[in-house]
Image (tube, rainbow, N blue to C red; front, side, top):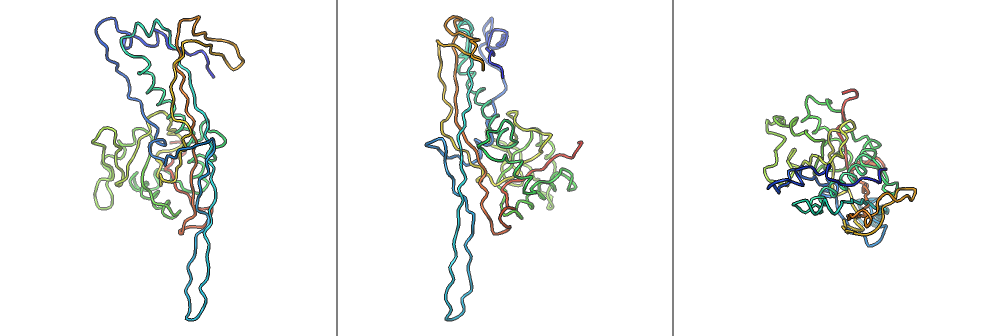
Length: 312
């Protein structure tokens, strides 16, 4: 892990410290987290939160004339969400801040938010750097439940998506949204359903997702998506639960030291005339997987993937 990363003049370049008149910043718009945007978000008043999930369904019975009515019961299981901490410190020399003609701290904040979103998505969807308290990532859970389709199973991607929707229906869940690798929209443009209607509708409003088979499609552009593992995620997004114990908090320090993992001081804010922005967030994630009428307990799952062909 790197502890000595700082922002200096060579990193900022003339776009952020212009020699002349230009005060505009041209940079990629930070992309938000698809899980933080689309999943069910619940506040947490402590480090751990218990989310009840339906485990046993009640049954009904025919009653013959004069016979006694039978009883039934409903059971619930607890799914525990544990908030884990995400944090980063960004030091910037005072001279760099003074010479910049824009507010560097306001520029850095959305980029840090994007980095946090990348970590949450990568952990929750693919298990990358996932805290052990989060349980299975979505891809692992879908594979265990047999909820994957290999790209090319149908005659085209439109049929692959439809087959994946069928798989989830047989698992007891209805698709209400998609997430995908960047650039998938160009594979979807021009594809038609059995009635000749376009399956994909590009977004015409800034900030709104595109539409696939009438449901929102978010391309994950924050760097979290691993296209070697998955092409498309289809899910009942209400079953993804993000617990927020502490939303992103920012604090700027003008004194203090930054140490590495061994305790060695590698940056002294006062001695090196610098300030540091510390950002902290505490967040948890779990997949709620309630039992359904369609399939037996243990075989249901609220998400599925189109995965790439081996060697493709």
